[in-house]
Length: 187
Image (cartoon, rainbow, N blue to C red; front, side, top):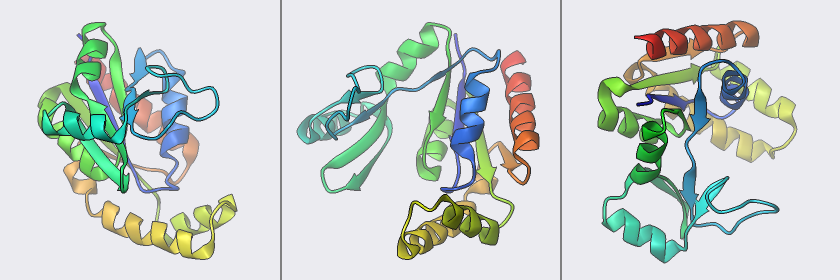
């Protein structure tokens, strides 16, 4: 029976880079496949990148309590984690990795308790986070300010996580995340 590793972090903290590094290590990690109500993009396939549901199907499954966590990002645009999919992956012996917002991370941890390790990836500072977001060159200034404001809110959740990894130096943060996950999986 597998275990669960939950990652949450403000945008620009390096979470995706750290998760991608960990997926290439010898930890038997597999991504949780989320559900969404948005249509597939490009070559995305149902049950591979996402489970694609209509907004009505998504709402029906919410009403039946089938999600561990979900979020309505825009009206009618949902993302969430189906309990049945996670249970299937755990039963197959996979250690399931979640990349979720702070509220979703806290909800999954609450549901699974000791079977889950929650990891918060924290930027060294809000100023550094702003610098990274500007450096990406992908967002307008007002979008960056919205992300920074959201990050300040999300940083308040860090104490609710089992482990906080400060990403000041990427290699050190990757090693620290690897070490805490290996220790958790071996206990």
